[in-house]
Amino acid sequence: MRRNDAFMWIGCAFCAEFVLAAAILALRGAGVHGTDTALAATGRLSFLLFWPAYAGGAMAALFGAVFQPLRRHGREFGLAFASAHIVHLGLVGWLCYIGATPGVRVFEVFGIATGWMYLLALFSFRPMQLTLDAKTWWVLRTLGMNYILYAFATDFLRNPLSGGARRMVEYVPFAVLVVAAPVLRAGAFVVRSGYFGRAEA
Image (spheres, helix red, strand yellow):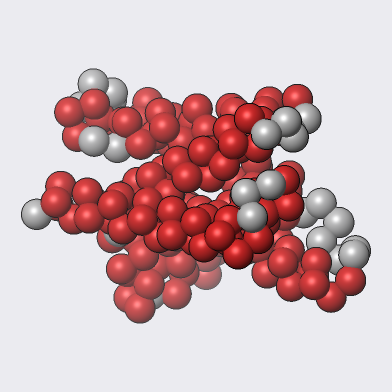
């Protein structure tokens, strides 16, 4: 059932991102403007799938049982993110095809993040994960997840308060989530370490 659930998440996420991209391209055209709009929308949807995978366990540790479903389904959120992001990458390919190739820096930052994303997705399946010891998997996952968050941060934290009300609506909520995610994980680490309990003792 666990494996079937994962494939359901993968399929649903891909379909949701595909429908979103197709709807935007149908409304705004498949030129540079429409593709840029679809890229922005699908990138945000991908991030909303990534965020619980990154911070769901921390939310459960800090705020209790109400957030346990986020912790319990962290792997599924991660796989859904990797699946949905295929559509986003397809749009990048289309942008290159129509002659509006992004800058080299974009490929450097997000290319590495994409590599991490699919490496983690591959090793999230038990046969592959069993080839690693627990410490190696923890290090791999920690490095990969934090780099992916950094890649999102390079976009969402790029002057989110400039450009008027529309830009603020498009960027500020995601900037807040980008900043909150590592803060939550740091707080959860302190709670799990029992630091406050030792201090009171």
